[in-house]
Length: 316
Length: 316
Image (cartoon, rainbow over all chains, first blue to last red; front, side):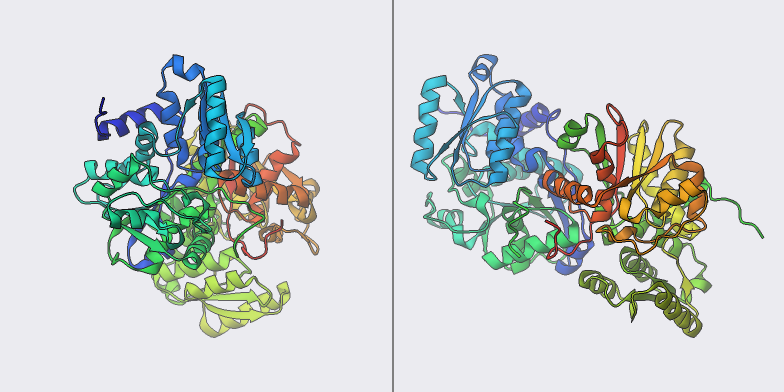
């Protein structure tokens, strides 16, 4: 049976479902950014979201959208990062078990956070094969429901709520820039923005060193990333079968940025806006930095996707 | 002629005067803080204020409160830090000259910021005597109006607008904690809070290594600090003749905190709230940390006073 395509109604439903759990994050402005780019820049502070990342929106919508029967079996995902924390917290809030498969080389700060939210962690080798095999084994044992980090309808709809809030706050945005890894945030953003606003263009931001989305759009089919190496560790994954067609249909373009621009943008944001953002979030700022597109005079919404970094290992 | 004591009307007037220039900063909550202290903690994000510190409120109110004739002569202050930036930006917004006397050992990032706002900087030896003498010389040359960083009525009233916004957002706050250096923020906060709320108690937070306010309140007279040595470099100054009596009358108590608690609190805030705060702001958080007062179950407003730090020299 073919499912109906995701609709704006799914995003509205997600917003209602997560309303009592997720923060409505502030949309901040910064004179330094406005001056530097001769534009009006609005920062959607998902680094200030629960668990420090937009991922909580999608995970929360997915977990609270389950039937009581399904929910009772618990939820599971393999994730090295923010989705794991998000799922763990969402499950804790619903009072159901969360199982998380993490690569053994995940940052300590993320391991500790996931454990702190009460999830049961299983460590495995840092390969996609090991992660999937380990997850499958646990699903067979306990029957938990898989909540994929991005290739999941409820997750995509949940991520779209960030753009919904942005456009409620500033209805005449000209552009929204969101980073793209697996595409959950970008597809949810594009779905929501295009349905709500006639005006807004949605642009994806991607490290040139992990440019699978850029290449996939060019090729007209999913080109998986091959051993990507970027400081933006949240953007290593490739597009999924649900996110790709939405992005293909609704995103104006993907802009790729260099590693050093990502670091420079990240530092500028920390220094000038006083916001701790992770490299993946800085990728969206880096699009302004590299000035590949003419943004002068426009109202630009940037999704600062997260703020989870190891403060002992800063890239400057 | 004796001036009338500062009144809540002065704070309301300040709020109106700075409304188009200063940010109304967000008042954020953080589940980690609430859980840790079994209380409801509200963070007034003055690190997200213009120039990255509450100081802009006072400087802006002082600059825009000048007559056109006085303003035309320009404004001057000696400051190693946030007040200098605040005054420079306020003067720039009014289109008048700003003269800033800075100690030669001020952090590079602060020198650059003050220069960036277009102020004319004169460097001097890092002693109070040298700063005052240099300032006096410039005043004699150009006739600029001195805007003292804290012992100035307009500055105190301006700083009080942060508490005003907090109590507008959460009228039933039980406690407000603000750091105290020269006392501009603390006196403005106490003045405003006590006039608006029957309920709220105002507490000052001070490094034990720079505890002149604590000792002044105990002695019933201003005890200047003597070579204070603390990481909270915004709190090195001693109370002034205007701020002391307001604090004496309206502040419940000053709580002193250890250096290592300041660093630990600062890091916790960066990690969990994703907000860049400077050590002086962490001093207010450190009061919760050291648990010298029973805060359980209360609604606690904390003024995160600023976020100006050198990202290359973090204390961990």
